[in-house]
Length: 86
Length: 84
Image (cartoon, rainbow over all chains, first blue to last red; front, top):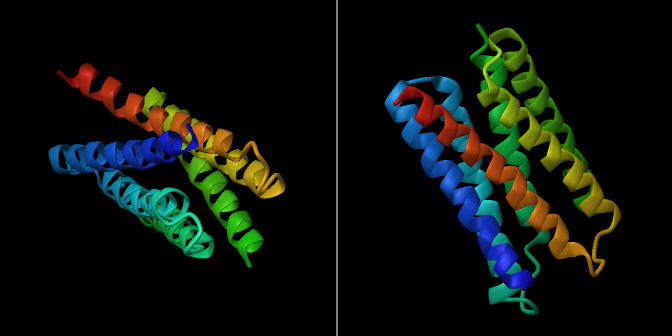
């Protein structure tokens, strides 16, 4: 059951990335570009989650890497939100 | 180290949510409200995950994460529907 949840995390974040990226290509709104970059990072984060918890549950601990990627992704978005204002 | 990263992610998510909340206030576009909610859920979820790290409930937090991401998907889909 937990494995399914981890897979779904990766899948939904990938969907967010694709939808946001396509919306940006369609409208040119730069906020959508930054949001899509954030979800690109989140997709990497959740892919690492699947690798960490499902594929290599005992061999490796990617915990810190996952957090570092997630932080970079959200900070990128915050930067974009500040940068694009007005 | 991990706790610090978790805290930083939570605060950054909270700030991103606040930005989207302000965009919603000035535009009244529900698209931004969905984004604000999503990032606030993610912020609260990160804090909860840190406090209860390693507990048997861990998968539940990832379920909450799917809900937060789902809000983004809903936001985009309803925007697309409005446009077409």
